[in-house]
Length: 201
Image (cartoon, rainbow, N blue to C red; front, side, top):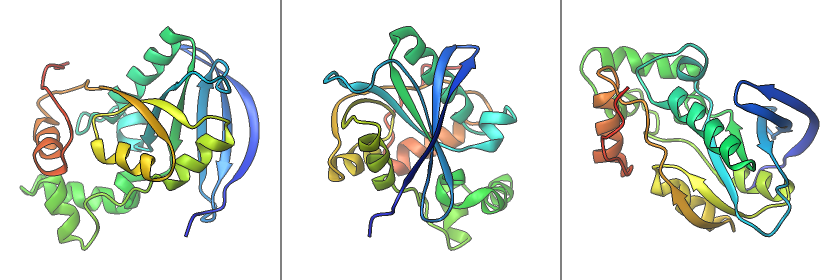
């Protein structure tokens, strides 16, 4: 069953990358998701788009355990350079398991498990994110054709199943470092992410 989304306020969002706009959407679980965008998204041209799942540790605290903060920064840079595009900032912390369980999984990873097995040992999905709500948000923003910034083919297929035309994929591989090498290798080997390992920081 698809969720109901409610479109909320819109405001200017000046950033270090340029002047963006931000609009908030609320879902059935009362979670607030954001679309941060630049330019006119209502034309027939595909929208350069990043679906970014919330990552407090990477996005706000500068953690090197993942590549999330690096990817978010790169998405802002690419959209600012193009002058048009959108970031869907989705409240799906820890691939959908929440911050508390994410840190529980980190604790297991500190003791030797990889990111997939840590989630499974906690009886949680390896990846619990859903993208149907993203498709709804895109249509509410008057676009359904995207060039998606992602390394994750599953995200593309899920969007297509929900009626979004993903016309191309733009790799967004950045931020590899000694603290997240195992994490990135697991994403490639066990979750099918497309990575080339040429992005050390």
